[in-house]
Image 1: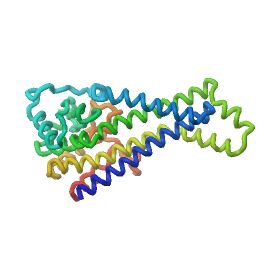
Image 2 (image 1 turned 120 degrees about the horizontal axis):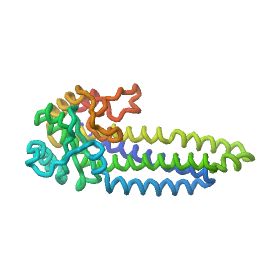
Image 3 (image 1 turned 45 degrees about the vertical axis):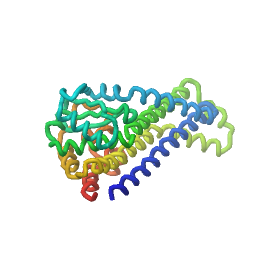
Image 4 (image 1 turned 180 degrees about the vertical axis):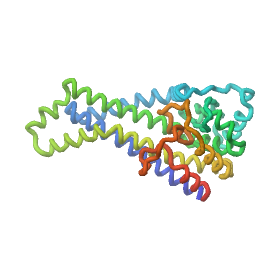
Length: 299
């Protein structure tokens, strides 16, 4: 059951990332077609923007994310022996390098991992999670975060953030071009064009308008999928689903965080803001906690 869960979630991740790339390409084509009379030019600009943001985010992601969430780094085991050794033990079991360790001064229990790859990873926990969880429960949580590191989820999330930023840039670029004298296809070329050209223009504009929402939905779908995979990975590492189950129950029964940055919400093991869930779950950053716990109990 465990390995089937891991394989299924890996397949889902491939589908989601493929959807992200296709979405970026479609938006680039639409922006180029509507505003600059060249769909290919728009596609090339989209790819260049995505590459630029990926390089920027991958090279600086850890420090940026930790600064936004007010993380305080531990530099040696003596700074917090218990936390340091739990992270060290879980990294050893996961066969990844020891990550940087941070503490966030917040009474709400939560944790997350970030970075570019296992060699440049970091783990952060709140003071609230240290105060409320037992060692067994903390091992389940850190095992979850080490699974994110081992599975390169941290890089996937970084790439997703970069692609979302690139999509926002394309939309803003296109709309600015429209207001400042661009969009000649919509105003001139299609004035005397046939119905097919007009329909293509309308579809392209709809794509551009809905692009930011679509990008957010794909990013959230990726986050939800990887949480299930990391839960399964924690069980694989600790051989103890009860520890993580108990930890998730305590995390779920807590107040929202005060120190978390909204753009980092998807990184946390649980939604730090306890946002009201939508009935479709399309706008949720995390899967329903009850569903995660049920999956863990069935492993």
